[in-house]
Each structure stands twice: as structure tokens, then as C-alpha cells.
Length: 141
Image (tube, rainbow, N blue to C red; front, side, top):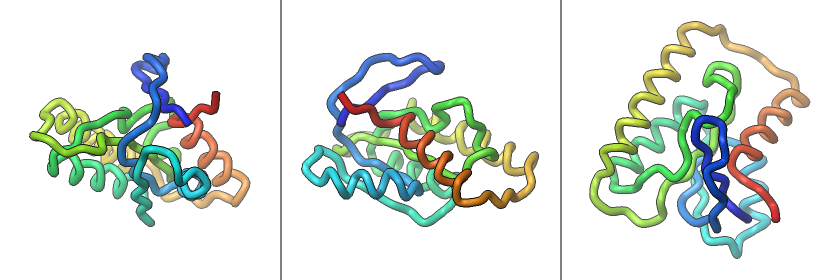
């Protein structure tokens, strides 16, 4: 399993994956459980998009740094219920760049929550959202 690092919708590079995966996506959880030998930890949260960003912010305050951007992809926070973010496995000193990015991402998420109503999607659409979120993070070689 390899990590795709994205910047402005372009692939920076692909690196062997390591870190902590923070997600509310059942598909990511399922695939991580199938690949227990990989070099990552999984934190599954039964929460919404904003809850994942808050969990990531808590990790950053604990000294972890962002590996993937919290607003990767072209789907706005109010348009999908799923989000997966990867942070470094090792905690160090506070990474102010990661902190600024996550704080701005939380503000963006809150803005989109105000602009959209609560949506109810059927299982097929939810499965599509899960796959899109999964594909933003993973790639098989």
C-alpha cells in the first residue's frame, strides 16, 4: 500500500505509507483491517467530517504533523460525510504549519456547514463517497 501525497490536485509523489490514519470512512477501516501488516495505525471515529478535523487537530497539538492535506480532493466538506487524514506516527514538537492548515480547514468546514442543509443519501451514494475518499489516500502498485 502506498500513500499519495497531493498538492493542488496534483500528485507530488508516492511514498511507502506510514503514520496514523484518522478516518470516519468504513471502507478505509475495512481495508486497513485487511492489511494489518502495513506500517500504519488506524484511528476510526464514528463522527462527521468536522469531527475528523477536530481529531486531527488534537493529534497536531500532541506533536504529530500532517502527512495529507485535510481538504484534499475537489469535494467540499458539506458535500461528503467521509474524511480520511494521515498524520505522522511519531510525535515531536508542535508543527505550526500543520496547525495553521488544520485550523483553516476547520474554519472552511464550518463555513460550508452553514451553507448546506443536512443531506440524506442512500447506501449506493454513501458507498461512492467512501470509495472517493479511499482513493484520495490509497493506491495499489
